[in-house]
Amino acid sequence: MILPKAANLTVYPDAVELAAVVAQRIAALIAQSIAARGVCRIALAGGSTPHRCYEQLSSLPVDWPRVQIYFGDERCLPVGAAGRNDEMARRSLLQRVELPAANVHAVAAELGAVRAAADYAARLKAALPLDIVLLGMGEDGHTASLFPGNPALQSEDAAVAVFDAPKPPPERVSLSLATLNAARHKLFLVAGAGKREALARIAQGEALPAAQITAAEWHLDQDAIPAKPI
Image (cartoon, rainbow, N blue to C red; front, side, top):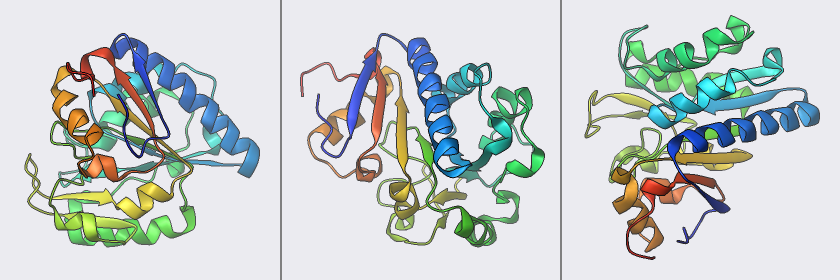
């Protein structure tokens, strides 16, 4: 299978091995960024596959005080809500490592999408380009909170307000395509049979949101590969 704009594509036997190997890859990229610039600025993704990866990453040797944590997107829910991406990251990774609280740059999504996006865009100015962006992909081909046909795809602001998301909650904040594409390293983590159709559509050249991320590493498990050769 060939994804037109991918830098490379790696397939793993299952989601467990995917998470373990990509955790090692992330740790190596963090070390490279710190060696080159003295800091690593990384945007985390939500979802079950990144969750497993963060658990693996938490046990690896990383110079956490030199890591600055951002988020690729956030749901407009109260602080501490189980559905927030920062809460998932806190439980699976951030509370398990020696990371200063000031190094975590959460989206103030509890303020509503418009205010939170403007606030995050302002806070991102000194951090761009990000060193690493981690990404998942939904069954409809969305990535971060950039959904097919949503007006947020057209914005070139650093962070964008998202309304009318097709899955709850409908109001979100996302890094823009421009911010995601400007990152030095972009890694997709995609697992499960539910992703086959979207991957097949991307392989056939359809410009789904995930397909608009250029030069990314795609890490897939075997279940995600479309049944028919592409």
